[in-house]
Image (cartoon, protein in one colour):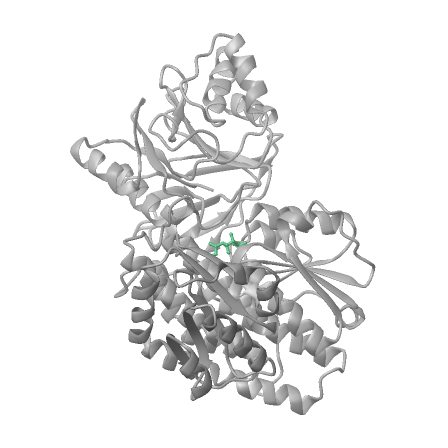
Length: 616
Ligand code: AGP
């Protein structure tokens, strides 16, 4: 997935573009580039590697101009290299394009264009767009019409921006399946309007004042003080701009060294904020944004959760919450599996999609699969302007605030809390859980923020564990019931930012194969808070010790028995078992963070990853 920016206005175009790209770098950081129009002459600078390298180049060779586009890349077609980086141009360099997404029929178009004598220089799918645009200009179509003809030819999910010396005062844009925001700014006397394009809000803060979230198959152009929007047929539309509420400090690191660390430490405040939104003074759980009838919710007999990565790990506990508190059948599956297995979903089923970004391609595809079977889809997303939010039958806002670190942390605990509250909400509608039990669980939830703060205050112990894990190359995470998903999530955190191989297993599965991995060099992280199955986890720990394995345990305060069996341990405050995943994950998030630091890894932008996987 990539990041796109566009700007037209009186400010330094290269500065606006480069700062915007830096704020979108979490979307991909293989390479970056900008194209700037100076009067009617186009200049391009692009570079393999992070945006900082491009900034150095532009500082040495300034690029004056009045409009421009920029791109930061996560490679899909063609290795990360300067020649494959965006913007891509036609042979004469008079047309430049940046794209997020994939032109799925690019080979067909590339062959057609090469037969027409067009010469390609990159391996990318994107490069067909400037050549196709030039082809239609040569056939004497007006640029606006030529652009619409290009959009008719390219297939796939994309967001694109295009500039051309033929129309040096315009930036063309189009959106179909990948996010793109149109935004406007005004200076003090409300005269000099600036126009922006961006893949995501952070690139627009604080310059732009109002934003319009383009819908699929919308396109148009921006020029000085003008915005023209239409559908792909050229039928004009009026953009409905909304005030941008995001503030700079929402997306700056502040006193933290990394976004990931900031977002880990934000979790206690975030939980308090979510609770203040979700529970009213009468201790009723409220989902104001939920547009589903109570009698529909009361009839639900089966819930199928589909998500990817961290969001699926939260979904696994969503399954537990719905079965325990709503007494309905619940399942959870990878989006990338759900979409292809022709799932059996009956009339009383509801599909739940969980996605921090609201743009994950597989989760979106599974949403469409469910809707093709006439099943309602409820999405839990952290971006209410995302494609998933727009295309679901109903949506619940995670209320986590912007999450910039590629490794998801606060979105995970926000997903757990919202799923837990939604389960209690459904339980009350279906008269399952007695009111006093619900109130007791809600009282327990209110203790979470302080318990989280206590855990975070003890971070020094976690640095020691990070230093130890820095010496190994393989790890095993074990957990059971509510903390089996914690084992999966803890393993994902460690592997994706420290590049240490980490596998998460249900403790009961350990003897069915994974135990063969145990050795002095393969430590086992055992998540064993106070619970009904604690003794089973202790058996797992003893099996490891009997084979000279090392144990790192996450335990409830005062658990001397497990302390005595552990090489390293970390204590969490006591908490009701169903809520323990909101606490047990915190030490694992910090352990992964410190291990990655010891390894010198790029915590916020791990290799090969991007914040949202908008391609399949
Ligand atoms: C989590 O740390 C990863 N970055 C990744 O697994 C992520 O959770 C997954 O891609 C799903 O993203 P989404 O929640 O935006 O759909």
